[in-house]
Amino acid sequence: PPHANEMMGAFEGLLRAAGGLAALHRRIVLLFASAARETIVVPVPAAAAASVALMILFGSGAWWYRTARRRSSCTAKGGGGGHGEEDMRGRGGAAAAVETDLSVLPCIRNRRSVFPKDFMRDGDRTIDDSIVRSLLDAALWGPFHGRCFAGCGHPARFVVLGKDAMIEMQHLTLRYYDDNWKTATGYASEDEYLEWRRMTRDEIAGRWGPVSFMIAIVMRRQSGPRRLPEWEESAAVAAATQNMHLQSTKFPELACYWSSWHDAARDSDEMKEFLGMGREDRCLGFFIVARAKRSRVKDRRRRDRSLME
Image (cartoon, rainbow, N blue to C red; front, side):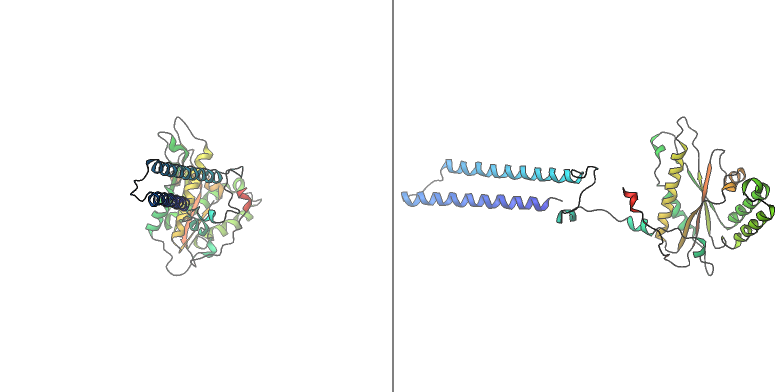
């Protein structure tokens, strides 16, 4: 217990005080015995006085212990900080008594967005299906406000695309831009578009060739009597996707990241039909799963401490 040392100290002090009273009482009795030279029975008033003294000592100890706990509790709740944060400065050993469970923090710190340049391109690049199921299982535990309402299911839906389906989806993307390049790409001339199309077509076997799975990230729009705001459903899907990314840290060989994909094709009716989406559903991109060239990728992220203000 956090106050075990204080309890033991108080108890030892009470025992010492009780021992001192008992010794004093014995001396008084012996003094009377030597004076009267006869057997002395312990005087009732003296025994009563010792009992009262012990009661006072035990009561004082209990009062001190409760006061100390209350003071410690107030400090932990921000008695001096003003914002509820605990002030650990200058507390010395008291800070060591506060234990924090940091078991999940390494997973958060080790999460990486690993991009195609770091994908393995030679050798066995396959990822076992059981690993993908593990990622999806982690996604199931994401938070969702709608669980408070009867009939509201989680808005996240993940469509796992294997090799053939990935290639088909990329050809669908090219066909969409072939039909809509003037309005969907922003290129001023057809020659510029055709150059972009050539590079995008080459990426099917190049950039995306080493990828084992693309997991479509779909937000299903609820259609109930109490529709939640769309941003809440999007946030829930993002949290579920983050769970997948955190779970991927269990497998050092994985290279994962969230691609927003080509936005016009991603939001098209053709993509909705391909992924089996509803009219109001939204595709938020694809979670890319490949095998990394090396088990550890250098962390280049910068930590902005202002986020804690």
